[in-house]
Each structure stands twice: as C-alpha cells, then as structure tokens.
Length: 286
Image (cartoon, rainbow, N blue to C red; front, side, top):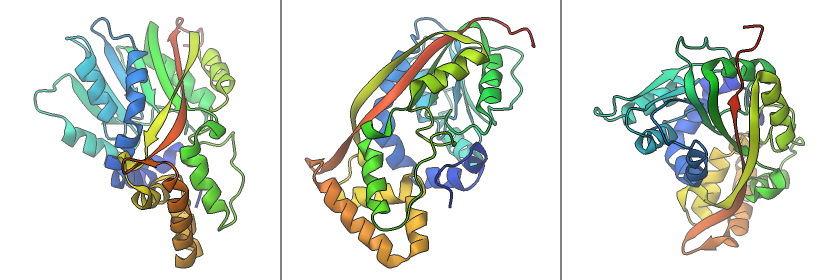
C-alpha cells in the first residue's frame, strides 16, 4: 500500500475512499474555504475553474459567493467524486458544472478561465512541471489563481499525531517529500519555482493557521476511527498487519486525541499555505 498516492490513484481506489469518508473530510477542512475563497477577490463576474474539486463542496460555495453572471466549473480525475458533485448541484444552479478531467494533461478550453482555484488538489501530479505548464494554458493572461496546500508537517499535528501512533506499532518508511502527497509543497519555495517556470508571476504566499475539527467534530474514540480510516493509507497498512495492531493503534490514538478534546469534539492545529498570483502572458512555445 502506497502512502504517497499519484494522481492516477485518485481515479480509482483513492477517489472511492475519499467518497466513503466525504462528509467527515469536508466538514474537517471546510475552515480552509474562507481564506482560500477570500484570496480570489471575487469582485466582478468571472469564469472560475476548480482543480481537483472532489465532491464539489468548495466549487458550490465559490458559486454562491461569486458575483452574479459568474460561471464555476469543477474538474476532478475521480469519476466517483464527480458523480457525487453532480448529484449535489441544484437544478437552479445552472452556472456550475462538473467534469471528469486529469488537469495535468487535459486540453485547455477555447475560452480560458479568469481564475483557477484549488483546495488541496495540486499536490499529486506525476509530472509537476508539465502539469503546471498545462494549468497555465487554462488561465487567461492576467488571470488570477489561488491554490491551498498543506504547510510543514511539524505544524500539522492532525497528521503527525496519527503517523506517530501508527509508526509505534508497525514499520513505517520515512515520508518522501518529493513524491506525490499532501505535504509535497510544505516548503513553499518548491511550488513557487514550479509556478514561475510554468509562466505564473506576481506570486505571494500567505499562511492560514487554525484548528481543524477531526471528522467534523467527533469525540476522541470516533475521531481516532475516522483518522485511521481516512488519513493517508494508515488504515490499510494496519489492516495488513492484523487486527491486534489495528486495535492497538485505535486505543493509542484515542488516548492522544483525548488531550485535544473540548466540548465533545477533537480539534487539532493545522497550517495551510495559500499561494496567489497571475498568469503573466502567453509563453513562446504555445
């Protein structure tokens, strides 16, 4: 079981897993929507593409907050997640659509978008330089982007706590910072270099820090079950080891989470990088 999923993994097993845990995952990371959407500066009607839209929660929220006349399209590599996103769309929401697409390679539309946005959807490209160069083609010259990625592991104990517990029970390889995965761009300079080479500019990075409600606000024991089932491949790795190891991890993680439980809900600190910038113009090779 691979702890560092590539983009192609999301079209099958990873997408199905995310869908199975969708309610808890979306409720957990919803706090990131506010600073991310604010970074778009939705002060005029525009066309927006949501990259790695998942179940469409953020896409629909962007549409609700965008100016009248705006159009928002969500793209994801997972058919299961796009099916769910389409089911969420209300009949009157004609200005939103969801499409299956691998944004690393998908042909750019005839009419480029005014804005690109992504909440944790750009960390899994197999070939990042080519993928970001392709994304630049989706954005009109002068068009803006806002991308959210996870900050340093040390500043995201919601993840490190779970990994530490699992590593005490089974052998875990060290994280691969260059491999596809949620913390691939924890060092902001890595992504800034890629974006610059792809034709983006005027870039800034701001950090959002806050507490995430694990599973949407679950008590310690339920939060532990949710985290092991949802985060990375921890649950699968423990299941391969056996029931005894899985139960030991649940007990240990419940104890750790109990220290962060207030008013019946576990909340853990998080750090998110929010990158903003613009496409400077057409590149010569186009």
